[in-house]
Length: 442
Image: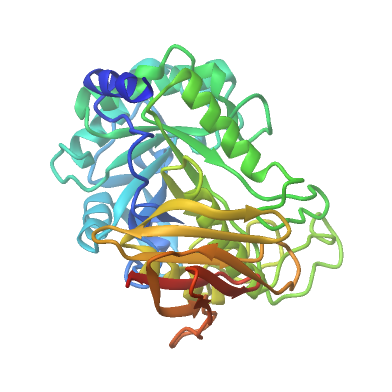
């Protein structure tokens, strides 16, 4: 019945996701957050094919929404390190497309205060329509696949956000019906000040293609902001994502769910001696790599269509969200190598099933090749400790081709071991770093 409903809805809404179909290939799942001229597209090609760019609308309007955009350049001159000029979006977005990326642009209208917008309906519509006409999948350059209406519009009331969403979404639809339209960060209910309650957009489902979730695995909030491992059943991390999935299935069947922010801070610097971050708690470089990769894996096992990690680069600052990069001052951290290996290993595979999923004990997921019958089994210890163990899962009719443990540095990944007995049971040593086993039919 669900399949029939989705098929019928797809005639009305061509951008619907078919949840009963196959999961996305991991190359179409793994994403990274970026920021305009700061992003070195060549450096990050090994870690993701999907990028989410923070696009400040104020740059295009010089802080005045009544100014129409003058694409391809920003009205405002931007200065960052050696760059000091107007940003040319043609050059930026077309360059990323040429480098093989799919681009989600987060339209950060909230970079201007609400009282700057004297006519949201007119100016929001005009801006979004102009952007979609030039950069959308049917536009002149076809360089931006999807638009997100707002990132975290904290200072906008629910009514103001709904009006902005409807205005911009209508502008996008008028310009390019193929362009995917994503909400700002949403949650079910008032979870935090950074996410809007998805219920404020009820009645606008026809203008929604993607429900967008920001989640961080906080065990504690201020003053430590301490985070826990992604599988921890005591925290809200996965529950918040599942709540949006459940809301979607009940209220907006067929829409996509994207996790567009998640991540972990790791720094080599000591804490500040005083101030807001004196008691802040980060993680080690190794733990950052482990929990990022495991987050991608557990999100893949849910009805999530994409996940974008936060952040591409950091400057090693011991404060909240300031040490979340895959690179540190543009030099790869262990997480860079771990995520590169994840994409290289599973890019042409899709999540098939959970072979075992026991909190505090063992997780093992099976991924199926895009073509043929080959499989990859990924196993790990789902705790926040240095625990080691083994996991045994069925693999009848298969033999091991090779096994690798998640690497933390450049070079060949270490062997993970593992064996299949005469009964077709795969036994794999595991610890906090995921291990990958390539299987092929006998």
